[in-house]
Length: 455
Image 1 (cartoon, rainbow, N blue to C red):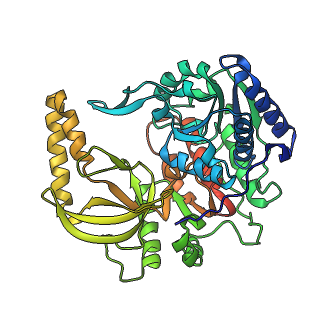
Image 2 (image 1 turned 180 degrees about the vertical axis):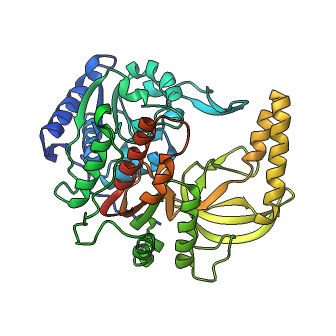
Image 3 (image 1 turned 30 degrees about the vertical axis):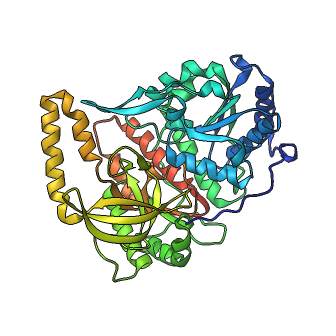
């Protein structure tokens, strides 16, 4: 698991902007902290590219707000993004002075089952007005439904939002309405992280491909001759990419963010995970069972307590298996897993369906869904059964969608797999090209030190 050492208290006054864009962001951010809620100056969006320093500047403004005695809440659209934001605040020694929650929780929203899937419904009163400043990060993930609930309450506080419109759209939607709000904006497009390095050159080229005008739009391909700062070529074969991961295997066991592979299709991700998992756990690692040392992702849905009344692990959160034992629960063969979830210190116990009962469980889900189609009052029963057991997957490799928001020391992107989306679906060629280029940009920008790609 990751271990982090908090720095000394962050001093806002020591922050030196690296360019005019950063200076403008800090200046308008300082004005925001003095403005009255509900006024134009009390709302600011930082439109930031990868490596532009927006996370550092946000922490500086949050520290300044705390110094002024303001009550601050930091919120994101997902629990995964929230964990990353908490980690950043902890590194600057300010995490204990602010509140962290998802935007949905801040708005009093909860997913409720219905015939169209799970939809957000208000169940509690919004608490945005409790705080003097709200920092909303990862704005590109805010979908229309969340924004519709959120927008009317923003006048109750000072609002600082950040995001990158070149990243992937919310699922099934276009550009997040977050970027169309009409609020004051500062664009942070000049890279700071590895500003003089070849990796940032490739990332910047990918972002330019995303934001190109329609008449000049083209499918992106990275420079085949690009090299990393240490002289290693960025373009590799799939086998060479796996070997690069295995060269870091001892460090990956302690910190999986040392090296990740990202791809487009789940099947490709699964292939990479099988190879890497075998290297991490050894050739005798049980398949497809669980074992101590496994690193897992709660995919598609969170993990509830056996009685269904408490969410133990939220969607897209990662965990490490400490103990694994085959047993039974409510008539099903299951795995009793003792795990520690990223961001937590204390282990918890969860139950995962044993592969021996997978077919029976899936058939029961299909039967309950068919019954719910006939009788809409049975949808709750269907979802309660569907979510009885989590969908756990190894996460040494991830889809690009699940990687968004993460930062890895080394990251490889399987460009051959991204090519699968070039001819998929019924979208126009331009729409497919825009999506394809966003995949490249998000994947390449996950790397902090070395980036690799397969062509």
